[in-house]
Image (cartoon, rainbow, N blue to C red; front, side):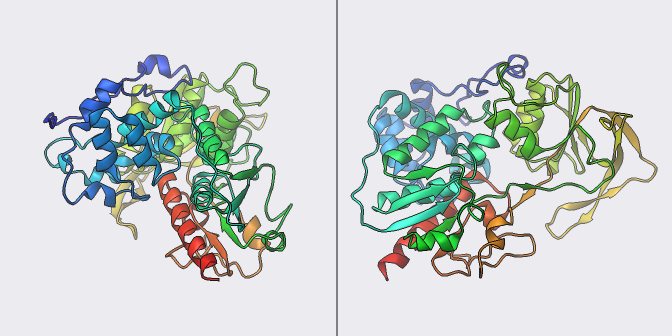
Length: 462
């Protein structure tokens, strides 16, 4: 029987004034009864519009139908046919603009909570099923993947299922990419990432860490070592800065550095040996999900006042609505229509304030958003001791600069044919943030899946 409730089943979560002092997961997940009740809100539409909103094309109505019946393991089987990282996607995908954005139920109420159900199914499987995926018989062909982030892991998993011998080369000491260094524990527990990676290893995927491709090995040397194709999924980890006076002062971080210290190096633990500034007043410049992550992490590390400084208004914030709401609940202060023009230091060369100007929204720019312009005579000071820059990232040029014939665009992103990830080098494919610039986890996964299919086709045609 269809559940006619127009609203989603609420997700239990930690109290905001408790969770902003710890790194435990904010959302606590559905119970079986909640999940089955929410699943019955699905109308099982004939044309299945939700699937068209999913970059990895999960058969969403099919897995939800199994949840409604209470057959959670069957639901997991449906999920795992199209995605290698369901517990991750269920937590960090922007479902509201993808699958849930296409849901018919949203026409007269709220969409079905597809992301929450995906998370429930993946978590249930992890907690109740000890069986690991079975290794597929090798077809004797080798493929190298550069980067153990979402796109590399997805590409590797898809190829391993087809019998390829896949080796992932990861520059850091831990696999996971942005899943381990960028997204905080309170949004994505790292034991979940480890579980998903262990499943890929069980499929036969090999992962070599501390391997900087372009320095330790080149792409040409990978081919010399017997690999027949290479997939570049090295991400976009090079931070951008504003170029304003004072950015080199002590206490100015990129969001990448700050979050890496917190997430990968566990700076929030009392036993951690990773140094991180003990801040009282923090300004995070930017309005995306990374800015929200940095601000909420700073609050949990003990900061009294944490400001999101963004040059547009609330309606233009690019972060997910859920992340904005969680930040507001946790006491993050939003300084909107505000732009820093100078970082002010003290006699020791440390940050003590930022000089800002007020902004107004003018005519739309090339992206269609109204362009922010400075309001005359509007300078003011915000006293801070830490500044975190979260205005975007670009790909590291190491791989492209050491690979002859690999073209990049003016932003340093690797050029591909746009269809299946083939670059300007034969048998070299690329996807994820290394191609698009900083984007979402699920889009990177979609690119990895698409490239795996193209690699398989290319090698079978040889």
